[in-house]
Figure 1 (cartoon, helix red, strand yellow):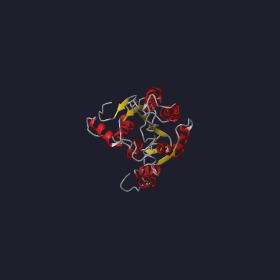
Figure 2 (cartoon, rainbow, N blue to C red):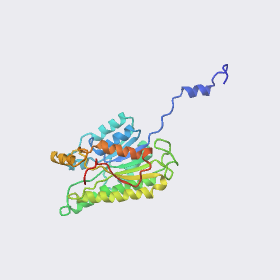
Figure 3 (cartoon, rainbow, N blue to C red):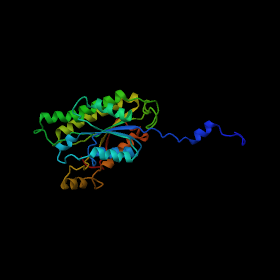
Figure 4 (cartoon, rainbow, N blue to C red):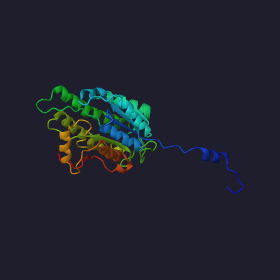
Length: 287
């Protein structure tokens, strides 16, 4: 316009309206039942990186374990994530039920919107070996660690929608072969001796996740498995901590933050080219 012209009403309105903040993508993280757990560490990192967070927990499992349940953990974790700018949805879910994944996705979508990243950090883990594992324990490990993970990945694949070439945070993020923002990350373990049902069920989880890297490629989804190695989340004694630290080249134990940094990268646009991999994030610890 010339120097004598006045701004139009539309110009004045555009100048006065604040810019709309981009939508935050939604990550669904399973197994976020304790504030010192790996799942909680991942949730904090992704919230800080701009994700909204839906997470699952199952208090009866923690009550069965030697560390016990942490009262109010879900509410406390949710408050932390909200302080980091995330909208949250804490969903209590028993993953032994085959209908749980549908209910989880229904609630996550109703409260936060479509899920862009699925992070599987839940686990059933009760030490037992070849000779003393019961059929009930074996079946429960496979129901939680394997079947529930498959059903969650399947539900994610059935529901995932987006537009070609979009990135996390953009409307319709996630579609386009080789250019999408969809992410699946599953946490695994190579522990087998003295922990048969846990290790066997996690091995099956690996295969399912790596299959997703190929079978969901047309959606623009990447799928990777992360083995964080031994991370002390309250289950180690002093002797075990010392032995593991001594056997690790960096001379320390892994932390939930170590795992969270890798998951954060895999879920970012920069992590797009890493696909169909089983990655060890263990400081070089010997198996």
